[in-house]
Amino acid sequence: MLDLACGGGRHVRLFLARGHAVTAVDKDLSGLSDLRQATALEMLEIDLEDGRPFPLAGRHFAAVVVTNYLHRPLLPTLVEAVSPGGLLLYETFTAGNERFGRPSNPDFLLEPGELLRIARGRLRVLSYEDLEVTAPKPACIQRIAALREV
Ligand SMILES: C[S@@+](CC[C@H](N)C(=O)[O-])C[C@H]1O[C@@H](n2cnc3c(N)ncnc32)[C@H](O)[C@@H]1O
Image (tube, rainbow, N blue to C red; front, top):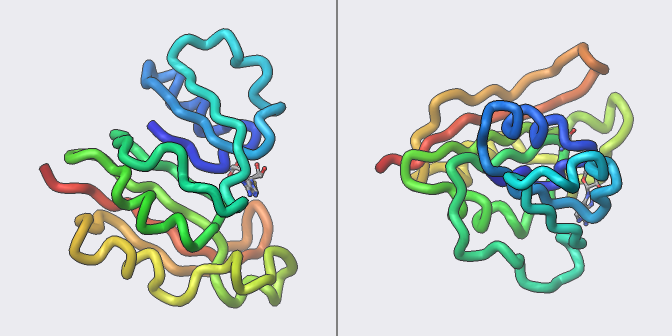
């Protein structure tokens, strides 16, 4: 499983606890320092937005998980990184979220239907939502679960 922009690693921990190999990527992996001995964990501390090629290009994962992060140029690469039979699980903020605070920069906000568009013709959409939530704080989000058919 790939957890891109994993932060403190809440999804890293969930997948490790269920016995999966995990690749954790973030520009700051200090929140995962307690996991440094975990043999099933590959840690990559890199800036995903510095213009250098994505170092995992060509690798494939049974799950690609991204939450609360958007660097638009990476979207096609992330879809490509889903193995046959694997899942893309993506949730982040959408346009409209600026009413509630940050992120408010359009570069960090999905456009209407954007997660559906990146999946179209490549992955089978199992679930998709575009909604306003009230918890853990008011926000506009999109989320998708999409499968690469074998
Ligand atoms: C809002 S946090 C989300 C963390 C985690 N995905 C979650 O939902 O709990 C955003 C994460 O993106 C990471 N991030 C932001 N810009 C980045 C960049 N240029 N390269 C790599 N990681 C970045 C931050 O370090 C932070 O951990």
